Length: 114
Length: 110
Image 1 (cartoon, one colour):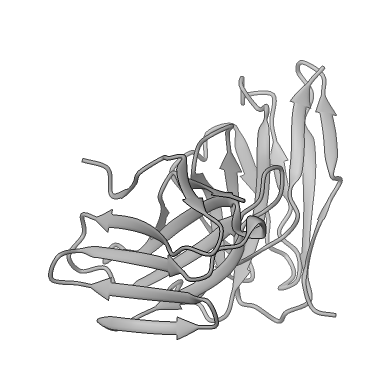
Image 2 (image 1 turned 45 degrees about the vertical axis):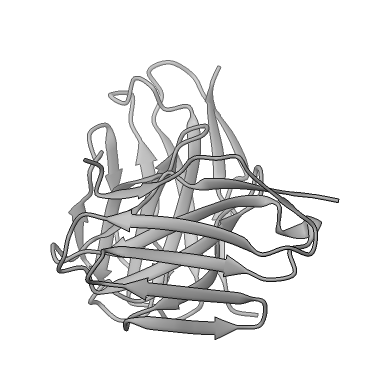
């Protein structure tokens, strides 16, 4: 079955530590996205990538980094510079590079501070 | 003014009735419009998308788009308890980015 796989489901970060969230898709989608969702809030865009080896900052990129070395994979690193990382992180993908297609989401990763 | 606005709710609707969810947007050049359902603790799930003015129906769901008035709505007919969730409106703007509203919490009462 095609879909988007995020791992791990739960992640705990110690102060000063970088952590990496995995996102893999087998939908053959060109575009991939990372969002952050805080309780009772909508989705805020962290980074997006429309093509391999290229990515763009979203609205809240500070303290995060990404890579897009393969079409299927778009990992997100939450660095120690992100002082308030506790949130629900969602990865999404969509067909085409234009960005106007429906996005499909993975099951998410919940990140908390130890 | 927020770029995409939704009433946070909760919107309480009796089982079997029609639930009406509304969303307004500020960018007149917006092109594509999406509705997602999100159960508590889960990820968003695409319900409907609409690109042209008018109505689009899929089962119990109808999306309505009025570009002149800059609103998009989602109607859910014969509401079921399983429809209780938060509904997110998303808009693809003329700045080539998708913007999500904060969501409307819908509660279907038996």
